[in-house]
Structures are given as C-alpha cells and as structure tokens.
Image (cartoon, rainbow, N blue to C red; front, side):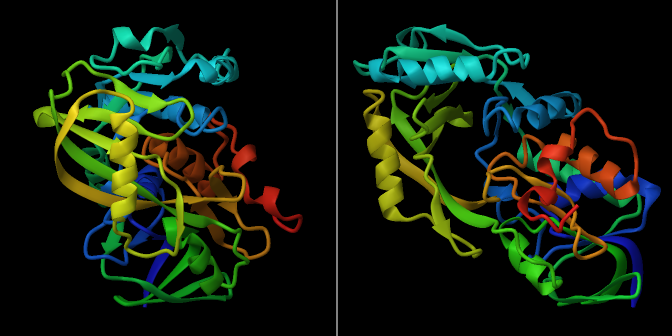
Length: 361
C-alpha cells in the first residue's frame, strides 16, 4: 500500500499540468491506463490555440493560459480567419459582439485577400490575429517533467479497477497495484463519468464525441503565411503544417463510447468535400488520418471542483476540445481549490459541479 495525498486519474494534459501545478506541496500519484501518457485526446490534438474557440465562457481560461504557454516556448504565430458567405453576416456580427470587451482582437476582413484560390461566395471574414500553433507534445512533456521534479509518481498501465472510500481517504485498486490517497481527482477525459461511478459518485452526464483529422498534400501547397481557416458555421477548419502539408477537420462531433477511436472513411470524405468547396486546390494525397475523443458536460463547460456528495472526490473533466489551450489556467484554478488557496485570475464558480445538482457544493 502506497500512501499519497492526491491521486490523479489520467496523465494527459489535464492531469499532468495539475500535478505540475500542485508541485511539491503534496504527495501526488498520477495514474495512467495506457503505456504512455497522452495517448488519447492529448496526443491527437489539432494543435492550435484560439481565444475564441469554445466561446466566451472558455475564453478567460484560454487568455489566462496564453502567457504561460508563450513563456514556455509552446506557441508560434498563426492567426485565424473565420469565413462565411453572404448569408453568414449575422454570424460574423454575433462573433464580434460576444467577444467585445474581452480583450480578444477581432476585425472584419475580405477573405479573398487572405486565401489564394478561394472560391466564389466566401465574402465574409473575421480575423483573429492572436491564434497560434501550440506544440502539444512539448507542453505535455514539460508538465510531466515538472511534476516529476516536484516528486509526483507516475504509474502507467495502471487502469483504475475500483475506488473505495474508507475513513478519510481512498483505496485505489489498479492494474499496477493498490494505492491510497486522501483526495481522488478525476482527470480521465472521456472516461470521467465511468471513473466517477466506480468511486460511488453520481455521474454528471459527460459524453464523448469523435473528431476527425486528416493530413493532406495539396497542389498548390498551402502558403506558409496562411492562417488557420475556420467556417463561421462550425463545419470545417484547416491550417498549414510543416513541409507544405495541411491539417483538415470537418469539425465533426459524433457521439461515441469512451474507446480508442479510429476515423471513419465517410467523415474523411466529408472533410475533403467541404475543403474543396472552399478553395480550388487539388487534393494530391491523404497522407494521414486520425480521430480523437472530446468530452463535454451537458452545458459544454468544464467541471472543476469537489463533489459535494462524496468527500475527497474532485472533478477535473469535461474540457471538450479546449483542454490543451486552457491547461495552465485550468491547472492553476484546480490546484488552488484542492490546496485551499485563494482564487486566482479566473473565477472558479461558473465551472463548479454544483451547477448540475442541488446536493453538490
């Protein structure tokens, strides 16, 4: 029996940054079911940081994370251009209005001046200059390294099999052995509700959705200065990558079980069809295709906080597709709640699990 103050289930970007944020102020155990941390959502990210992604309720977390990500050298300039047709003018106006006063710089532009080969009809554009590439692997690796230096213990191939509350702590049976901890943190992503149920905690209705990505080689190759391009209707996005390649998604959300997902050929075909309706570039080859899971609470906001019905159980889940870009701020918020520190830059109230049921606090 190994004793820890805090056991975190899931060593993806959420669990890793939280362990790093707690530092040496507690004895931390990171439990990872896979051979390597970050195998699922973290390792399959679209790898961009956008202050508008996820909407105004996510933006404070994203914006607050920017300085830390930049200081770590994990961001590179990219920019984003949200485009639509004449019928989408109201969507552009709504986007400008909902981020007014947040500090996020947005401006209406002519997309034809930004995208070579743009097909006719794409006349509406909103430019978001702060959007950046994010080096997900380096960011995740840095968090794991900082957590290790602070004394955190990582156990891989350690799928949780049972979690029993006894006295003031938890007895955790895993594929790697039995451990005990005072606090159990659920940072299991798409598996958050099953982990909660295993611990005797009522699930919150966090559901998993599949997102498809493909890497294309096009003729012509995308210009090196092409920004991230996204449909105002939320039906596609693409961005240039190293070597003249292009990453493309149909921005799909297909409900899925919490499993190791693979891309469906139909979703790949839909992505390419939507892309070909935007530009006149020829798709020379589909070089890679992959899929990952995004997990959302019913209101599509993350859940950070102690469960009011079961002592010592902390939710750190429901982070959708924005868990990486918000990781530093989310980890700071959660670490403060767990350690009893004063709130930081982001108000935790809107993300508390109490919003889902009256008996939680």
